[in-house]
Image (cartoon, rainbow, N blue to C red; front, side, top):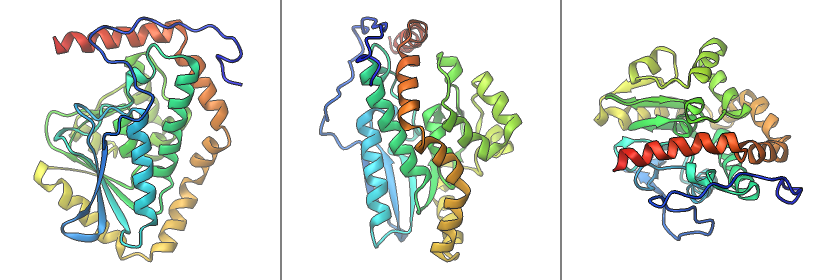
Length: 287
C-alpha cells in the first residue's frame, strides 16, 4: 500500500512561479543519445542531454536505463562511455522538482525509476567508463561511482555526494556504492559533510581514477576500455557481478521498502522545507 493510499498526510508547498512543475508523462524529447565511438566500433558513447544541467528526472532515468540495456544486448558493443553532451556539467543529480511539492505516490514512482536505472548501470555486463566533463554533484557523482572507471576533466569542478547540504539523506545503496570505491572513513566524512571534491582531491581519494585536460577525457576512457577488452569477457563480467552482488541484492530485496521510505521521508514537512530553501537559492542565482 502506498503512503497516500494509507491516508498519511504530507506537506505539499506551492511550486515557485518561475519553476516548471514536473511532467509525469513523457515529453517525447530525446534526453539520452547513443552513438558508436568513431575510434572504437565496439564502444557506445552514451550522452545525457537534458538542458541545462542533466537533472535526473524520471524520463532521463528511463531513457538511460533503456539505452544501457539496448547497448548491453547488442552484438556490436562490448563497452560504453557515459558522458554529458554539455561540457562543464556532467549531471547536477536528481531532479529536485521530481521530489519537491509532490505526493508520496509521485515520489514513490520517481524513486522506483531511479532504483531501476541504477541496478541496470551498476549491474551491467558492459565495461563502462565515466567521462566526467564537468560538475558532478549528488546523483551525478553517483552515476560515475556506478561505472567501472572514472576520468574527470581539469577545471574548477566539483564532485561528491552533497545530499546533506540539500537537506536530504543519501539512501543506503548510494552510501554503499561510494563505500565500495573510496572506503569507510572517507565515505563517512564525505557523506556527513556533504563534501564536494575538486578534481585533484577526488583523484587523491580514488573517487576518480584520472584527471586530464578536457580533450584527453575520452582518449583516457578508451585506454582503460582497451585494457579491459583484453580480458576474456565472460570471466570478467562474472567477477564484476560477484563483486557487486551484495550491494545490488540488498536493494533488490528491499525495493518496495526503500521506495516507500523515500516517499514518506521526502514528503515530510521538514524535508520539503529544506528542499524549498534550496530551490529558492537556485532561483535566486538565475535572476
